[in-house]
Amino acid sequence: LILSGSKTPLAAILFGLGMTLVLHATATGRIARFRLTRGLAGAIGVVVLVLIVVSAIFVLPIVLDLLGRDLTFSGRVTLWNFVLDRVQDRPLLGVGFRGFWTDINRQFYFEHFTWRSEDSTRAPFHAHSGYVDVRVELGWIGIGLLAILFVSTIRTVLRGFAAGLQPSP
Image (cartoon, one colour):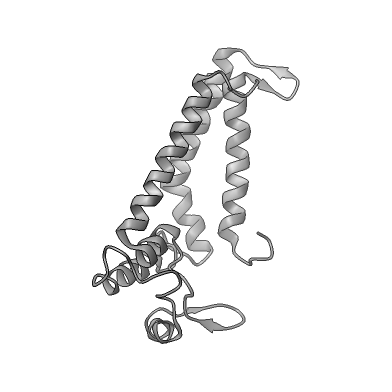
């Protein structure tokens, strides 16, 4: 993640680790060797939830502005809409794996969606969204297969919990 040069995955990983610790503390009632009462664990959970909501509403726009970003993640939503409009002639099967981001299409996108970084100016190699890329490259059939994968994974996890394979506290 560090070598990717992107700050978003680092922020997401730190947020995820922090939330994991908070959820663990509220669910188990323990922080390291210290045992919390149910009321204190619940209060911590409520305080964290309120902090997340307040941060999302008030702090996130300020932080993004300081980083030179906006809430649309630097024009990605515009790119997604543009890409999805361009592949409307192949809705069922898509354009095929890596069939869209060819040099010709990249040249077209270079003129419309150019991201400037410290070292170069470049056009996108992908849609910056796995779901949009699946839709573009594999069409609605690919989206359906992805949905089946999600549902089967959730069912497998729920069956495991029902069978008593719950993680130990």
